[in-house]
Length: 197
Image (cartoon, one colour):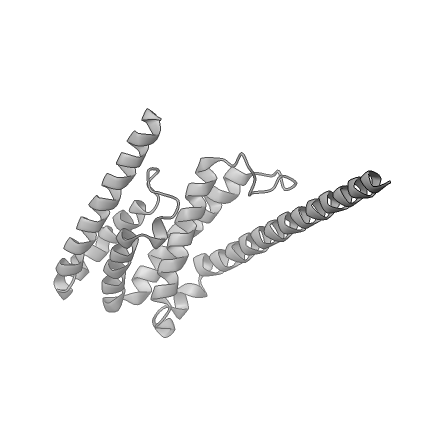
């Protein structure tokens, strides 16, 4: 219990830090000169926040993530293609790490009771990066060249494969649950028939 409390506290403090940082960046990035200087190396640093190990799995729906997302919107307003290019490169890296973690064991499902926490965190950061890209893609013509580049094509293919795999596993899980439920109902019916006899 003590370990969980410290993890929860770390997570809470981390979310508070991200929230404060995002609000600071939101006011800082209103100036074009600040955006230009920050874009040189700051975008990669901000993206590393999405991959921190103590972030909660549901980070993307947190208020801190929404604040951080608005900082990315401010950055992309001035140079969409540059931001999208860096996002795609980082998302491609996360997808590659995910494929490495899952490994060559294609028979073992990704979603199971004893799932590796590292896989959950990578899936969470993939979710965050795709959400950011969805926000950036509202102005698609500024970033079309990035999507047709090497990273863009790799990301599209990997996300498509990941989606198919997860949907297949979810549907298989639902079918197994339905089959088990049906078998249990049939067993109960047989017991009732035996009791009547």
